[in-house]
Length: 325
Image 1: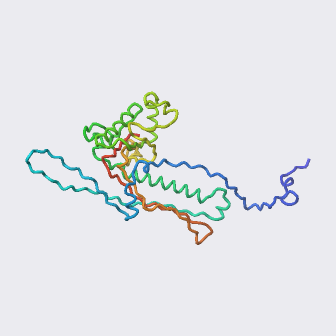
Image 2: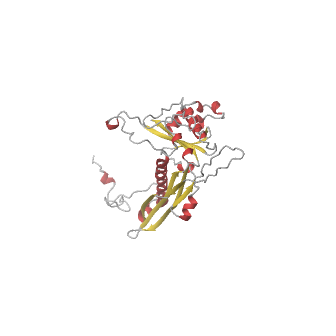
Image 3: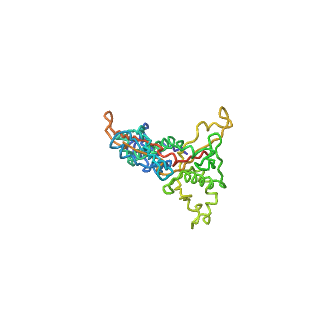
């Protein structure tokens, strides 16, 4: 029997030739209608900070001087004595717009035409989300260690000095048994600074969330809720704090090579933060995305710019915990 080869079944020319003919040098690609979904880190700084002075910066320049209300002295009164008058002198804080982040990319007309998704919108959305992550990370890194000295460390508490928030040298080890106590201590630290109970926030990492899910809080009867947080995953509020989750909180310096080498024996550690919305401020002066034609090719340049400032303006309204792990 004669051997039938693939070439005999599918000749290059003749009635079985492909249309158009395959040259052997180019295989066209078909673009998927859906790009792979990307997941972005949760950004939280904008949710817990205020923008009280953003309007001043936008209209007046790149810096605003904030006057803090001075604390006046109350004296004992005795009939017939002369009164002592003081001259209130407010101390000032400068909020400066001195940080900037940008993105820039090109979308070629040919590639954009061959792709089913709108690449310019898709890439712009991705770039915008990456920009948010960079800004959020920078903001937390700038303010996490700006708390009042009475609100942090091993002897925190403006009145009692009775709460251990942890230090770089001795971070606190949290467990499902003590995490709720630790959070209520952070609330008490703010109470001792006379911080209002409304508009308080707490930002934790997934590590603390996992501990909460294994604490008494996970049981509905302890929280007075109808549904356990183990069933709906919602943390909501704890002791007047609105709770946020983030992977962008700072980690203490020089703590990653703790297994061996120069940092052998050091304990890996991270931060969680709690405070009041008046403690942190954010101002953006320029926030724009624009498109221009590429003068040297067929396509568009897309670029985005964000110029901003961030600061802790009320240190007594911020507390930071140094956590092992």
